[in-house]
Length: 292
Image: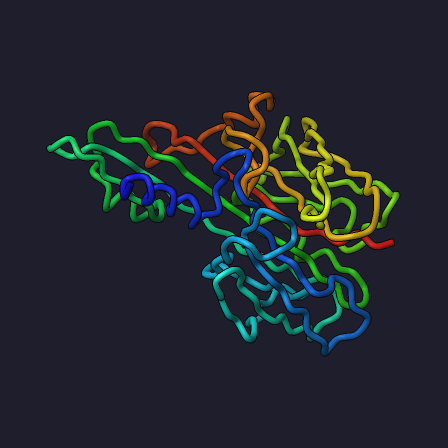
């Protein structure tokens, strides 16, 4: 049993997808559009069966960043993690758009020691070179990136915080993420390490799944330029998700479906210290509010 629990805990630590019935990770801001500075937004962060209800685990906030419209980093207030959710307050001192993001990147490795026992390791790419034997027997390595986001705008929307970092799987809004309206179509792009993520399945699920029999999932597939479009059927909070690295839809990062195009199943892998390619997994999740 212990041998199963350890790799499971590693997957949860990075928010990696597990199965079609696995839980979903999400942020839930109390508001996404405000008219004046000086107010706060409270954000809940959880991993749950139902959107957006606390019924499983909290999201760990070790990598939380709040990016103000001018690019500066803000300190979250009243940060707390309970049994089912984490929560924090976001000060809003500037006019413009804020990005709230919890992003993690790391490597997983497993190998067999001289006695034949399986060893497992998780850490940074730099630590990998120092801590994992270079010629370990049956060495298997995976590079994993996970990004969870939401956006808040005070007064006039701005675009500075929407620029991609060039690392992992990222959403580049063509339509501003705080200018989404029921009945209208919004356009976005997905990038992997700054390059278009083509042929990738995107899943969008409205909140309130506890009170309906169906997920009411909306799906789209990115084009050669990473672009896709979503038409919002009604107002409310939506969970948007895409991932690269195989598996099924529906995990905390949701994964590319078994019928996903090859680009979604097996992206170009990074290399470790110029040697063999390292298998890659990456997921992106955002909570977006659609207004009436």
